Image 1: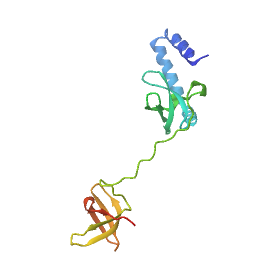
Image 2 (image 1 turned 135 degrees about the horizontal axis):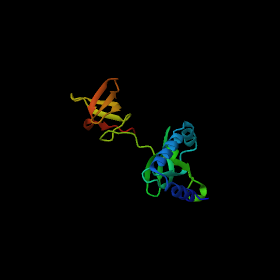
Image 3 (image 1 turned 180 degrees about the vertical axis):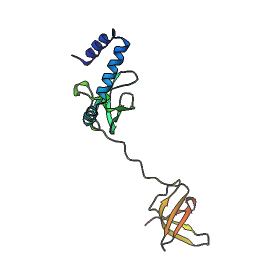
Image 4 (image 1 turned 30 degrees about the horizontal axis):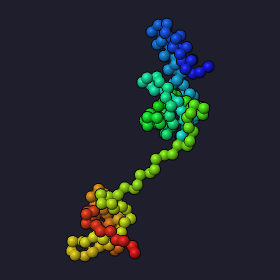
Length: 173
């Protein structure tokens, strides 16, 4: 029997229930969902890249997606059709069957961002030169880059804090 048929039959059976009976049913189902063994089993059944079905808690609608991240109690699911990420409790997610058209290709995380550089493109380890204010040219290597300044370790072992605009790159040839 299809899952939709079961839900339809359950809804038809609940139509005649009183408000008190519905509250009692909610208390029983909440108690069953609070069982830590269910949470552990749900979390263990999920893996990155897995095609899943999940419940939209605001509408009760069943949706389809792919697990892209997970933690102790929740998973992040990418709904590929609309390119939307959902953060969902693990209990509201179930693995999709292969025949439902869901893909089971492994999840490929996005590429790592490039290393941080200063405003003018300087980064740690760059060889630079600058003038010390007395007419002397100082050569060194960048030890730390901040938003407007860099800490330079000169060839003689001294440390200088220099604004990025006063630095010039040294190219190794």
